[in-house]
Image (cartoon, rainbow, N blue to C red):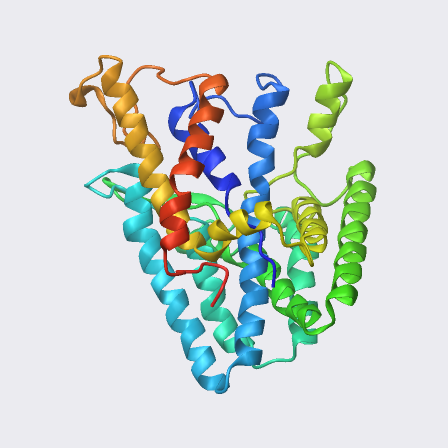
Amino acid sequence: MKRIPSIDIARDHTRDFLLTDALIQSPTNMATTTPLLFFTRWITHLCAPSFVFLSGISAYISLKNGQDLRAGRRFLLSRGIWLLILEFTLIGFGLSFDVRFRMFLFEVIATIGSGFILLSFLSRFPPKALLITGLILIFGHDLISFAPMPTNTALQFFGSLLFGPGAFPISPNLLFVVAYPILPWLGIMLTGFAAGRLFERPASDRKRLLRRIGLASLGLFLLLRGANIYGDPSRWSVQKNDIFTVLSFLNVTKYAPSLLFTLCMLGILLLVLSELEGRDNVLTRGLSVYGRAPLFYFIIHMYLIHLIMFILVLAQGYTLSGLVFANFKQGRPKDSWGLSLAYIYPIWIGVVALLFPPGKEMVAVPLTTL
């Protein structure tokens, strides 16, 4: 099975840590963004759905090829639990460097872990039933926006954990933030699990089917987005010029993943998977190094970029006492510190290059392979 390597994620985290006003200026705010900043953010949208969808495919292949289904399901369960533990320890610290752990983020690794736990039980059902369930979650999730929100705090917390993002103070010094609610991402994982059956077909058939499904997904995205009625809480509108109108059209919602976000990103992913079928050259072999050890890459790149941030901050005359480790500050200075995009891209390329040798030697610790 060909995988999409997790390279683009480094570009987005480089922006988060190093870009001027990265925590203030939204790349998707049509009033303040630029086309380059918008697409620097937009292209990284491919990463999370790719991780989740390919995790579902890999889970199917693992269970199908295993000798003992019960052992395979236990492995899914244990893998899911370990991913949750990693999210709230090693990964959480890598994002914040806050030794007091004043914030827990329920992000992509946690939602994949939760999906594995649920899939360890749901995999007892036929793939066709899981496909239908996944499609219902994907196509119906946006209906949640029409439902009244509960007033009970506990219900709000569990509703957010399942359906939509939210922030919940656990204590005066502890905040729990849900960025990747479970059910909409579970829908993507279940469709990936059902798509695992495609990889039982000959490569030529698989290539053709992946292309057709990808084109159909993008076609449906264009149709629904053009109608501007359902599928995303953010409607597109005519902007100050044609370029920004296109940006508004492409500005789909990731938190939580809307129907249009999912159709667009999975459509692109499926087309890329189709193009990767049967290709074996220097480029694909090089990229596969990252794809074989994505969890290693995901964790190490955060620590590396964070350390680069501290080196640059201290080199510019700031002191450790001037760094702020409160929620979402990540140790950035108190004032509006950062670099322009002209510096962000070379640093991103450098991080990717630096991680190639250890990734090549690394025994795979897969996120999307079981």
